[in-house]
Length: 294
Image 1 (cartoon, rainbow, N blue to C red):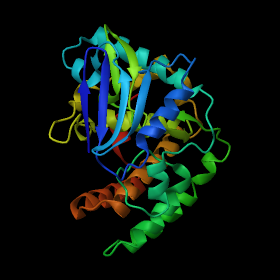
Image 2 (image 1 turned 90 degrees about the vertical axis):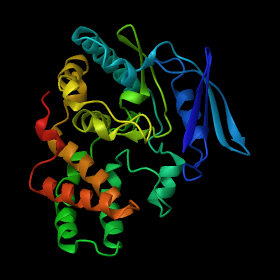
Image 3 (image 1 turned 120 degrees about the vertical axis):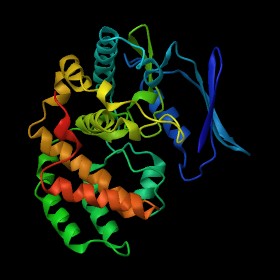
Image 4 (image 1 turned 180 degrees about the vertical axis):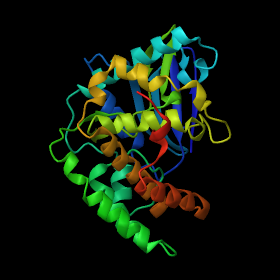
């Protein structure tokens, strides 16, 4: 759980969830990688740990979150925002990054600790999630056997990839906009080294299921019908993001990873059952990408 205080010049964030080990230290490291780049971002000022949790202080960016600005924006402004976002992502993916960059809390989760979040996708750990799901009481063994074979058939699609710096949690609440342009990407606590189209997976998931990306747990996400043109606008601004061979199958693998992580680790049976259903649908050749056009 985290809280934020937004002032005229500074933003202070406090995290009281110990499962996100060293999330702010990781974010500070990633923001340090952005120095001298063309990536719009909030300047890191300080971070540390206190009796109430971990804290992080950054400069305030001009504008508001895309989530807040989007409903009132006209079509021209929305397109301008997404084209600016495409330029920001291109710059982000060009930042030199250590090939093993991984948030410490995600490394913990992959090694057997509790899962505080179920994204971003880590394609190389997809089969690991199949095995984790097999340890869950009441799992569907036939489905998981089919999923394992499906994943193995597709892993060769990734072997020649060069990892880039991926934000990992890119949606309306983590993009700051002002006057029709992106003034900053924020919250790099989930940033990692992955293929560039792993970023696209999150963006398209947000477009298709925006209600599942609320700014706070008690709020609602954007209306998906207002985001239908976002993939096409992004494609026009950053076509290289869409140029991987067998892109749809690659995106399907990312989707499979996320649903497997939920099926294997989510604490609520109802949510796990939803993930099971989505995995079965994916094996039949369908998922949230069906309704998107780019």
